[in-house]
Image (cartoon, rainbow, N blue to C red; front, side):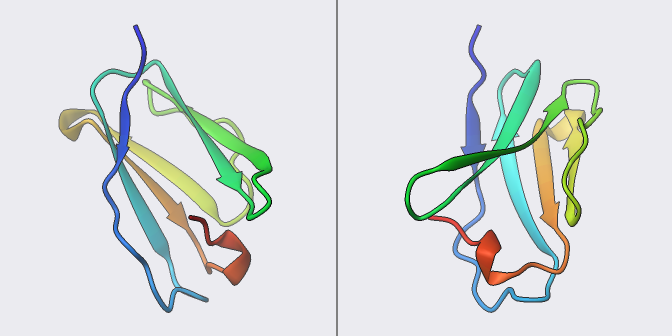
Length: 87
Protein backbone atom coordinates (compact mmCIF):
# COMPACT_ATOMS: atom_id res chain seq x y z
CA UNK A 1 0.00 0.00 0.00
CA UNK A 2 1.45 3.34 -1.03
CA UNK A 3 1.62 6.38 1.17
CA UNK A 4 -0.05 9.55 0.04
CA UNK A 5 1.50 12.77 1.31
CA UNK A 6 0.00 16.18 0.77
CA UNK A 7 1.96 19.34 1.53
CA UNK A 8 -0.51 21.86 2.88
CA UNK A 9 1.78 24.85 3.42
CA UNK A 10 1.56 27.80 1.07
CA UNK A 11 4.14 30.31 -0.01
CA UNK A 12 6.54 31.38 2.72
CA UNK A 13 8.21 34.77 2.31
CA UNK A 14 10.84 36.61 4.31
CA UNK A 15 11.88 33.43 6.10
CA UNK A 16 15.61 33.99 6.49
CA UNK A 17 16.63 33.50 10.13
CA UNK A 18 13.11 32.38 11.08
CA UNK A 19 11.69 29.02 12.12
CA UNK A 20 9.79 27.63 9.13
CA UNK A 21 7.21 24.86 9.57
CA UNK A 22 5.98 22.76 6.66
CA UNK A 23 2.85 20.73 7.35
CA UNK A 24 2.25 17.47 5.56
CA UNK A 25 -0.89 15.34 5.88
CA UNK A 26 -1.02 11.61 5.11
CA UNK A 27 -3.58 8.84 4.81
CA UNK A 28 -1.37 5.90 5.82
CA UNK A 29 2.31 5.74 6.61
CA UNK A 30 5.12 3.35 7.43
CA UNK A 31 7.81 5.97 6.90
CA UNK A 32 8.11 9.34 5.17
CA UNK A 33 11.35 10.40 3.48
CA UNK A 34 12.36 14.06 3.27
CA UNK A 35 14.52 15.37 0.45
CA UNK A 36 15.73 18.79 -0.58
CA UNK A 37 15.53 19.58 -4.29
CA UNK A 38 18.00 22.04 -5.74
CA UNK A 39 17.23 24.34 -8.69
CA UNK A 40 19.19 22.04 -11.04
CA UNK A 41 16.82 19.19 -10.08
CA UNK A 42 19.29 17.27 -7.90
CA UNK A 43 17.80 15.66 -4.79
CA UNK A 44 19.53 15.48 -1.42
CA UNK A 45 18.24 12.97 1.13
CA UNK A 46 17.67 14.63 4.51
CA UNK A 47 16.05 12.03 6.80
CA UNK A 48 13.04 9.81 7.35
CA UNK A 49 10.38 9.68 10.01
CA UNK A 50 8.64 6.44 10.93
CA UNK A 51 5.00 5.82 11.90
CA UNK A 52 6.28 5.44 15.48
CA UNK A 53 7.50 9.06 15.37
CA UNK A 54 11.18 8.12 15.44
CA UNK A 55 13.37 10.25 13.17
CA UNK A 56 16.60 9.03 11.54
CA UNK A 57 19.39 11.58 12.11
CA UNK A 58 17.95 14.80 10.71
CA UNK A 59 20.59 17.37 9.72
CA UNK A 60 21.25 20.34 11.98
CA UNK A 61 18.43 22.88 11.94
CA UNK A 62 15.82 20.29 10.84
CA UNK A 63 13.29 18.60 13.13
CA UNK A 64 10.16 16.57 12.45
CA UNK A 65 7.14 15.60 14.51
CA UNK A 66 4.47 13.06 13.62
CA UNK A 67 1.03 13.71 15.12
CA UNK A 68 -0.87 10.43 14.69
CA UNK A 69 -4.25 11.75 15.86
CA UNK A 70 -4.28 14.37 13.09
CA UNK A 71 -2.33 12.29 10.50
CA UNK A 72 0.11 15.17 10.10
CA UNK A 73 3.89 15.50 9.98
CA UNK A 74 5.38 18.88 10.84
CA UNK A 75 8.84 19.60 9.45
CA UNK A 76 10.62 22.52 11.09
CA UNK A 77 13.64 24.31 9.72
CA UNK A 78 15.37 26.31 12.44
CA UNK A 79 17.14 29.55 11.44
CA UNK A 80 16.18 29.11 7.79
CA UNK A 81 18.56 30.32 5.10
CA UNK A 82 18.01 31.15 1.42
CA UNK A 83 19.54 27.79 0.45
CA UNK A 84 16.62 26.04 2.21
CA UNK A 85 14.14 27.38 -0.36
CA UNK A 86 12.45 25.07 -2.84
CA UNK A 87 9.90 25.08 -5.62
